[in-house]
Length: 113
Length: 113
Image (cartoon, rainbow over all chains, first blue to last red; front, side):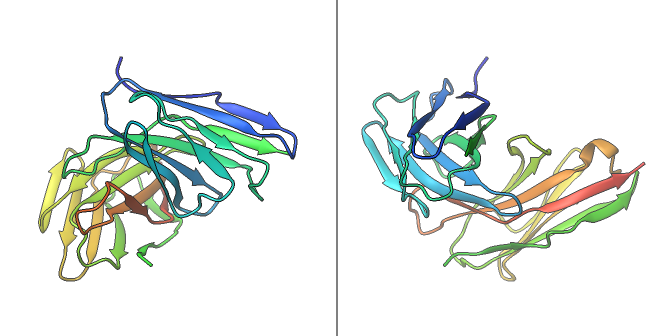
């Protein structure tokens, strides 16, 4: 089945620890994205990548890092520098065409205490 | 700052009625418009895309776009309890740049049996 997978579904960490969230897609999409969703707020873009080995900061990149070594994979690291890391993290992917349609993975809910 | 505005709701409609969800956007050069459905605790699911002025119908869903008024809406006919969810409006960045979307905060819809 084609799709986007994110793991783990739930993640618990202590404050001060870095944590890496996985995102894998087998849709052959070129572009991948990371969003953060907080209660009562819309999706906010953290990082995006349009091609392998290239990525750009979104609106709220501070405290996060990414890599794009393979077309299928776009992991997100939440570092200890992120002030409020507890949130629902969503990975998406899209074809690089005029439709701009993005498809989401199931998400990872991160809780930092 | 690009903005996408939605009424947060909650919007309550009886089963079988038409639910009308509205969205306005600030970026005049945006060309692609989307509606996502998000069930509680789940990731957004793309349900409608619209690119030109007028109406686009898909089953019980109709998307309406008016670029002059910078307005996009979603009508759900014969509403069912399973339609109860938060509906997110998304608009592309415009200007031929990256495939970035801007999301509204969503409208929560409740269909009453």
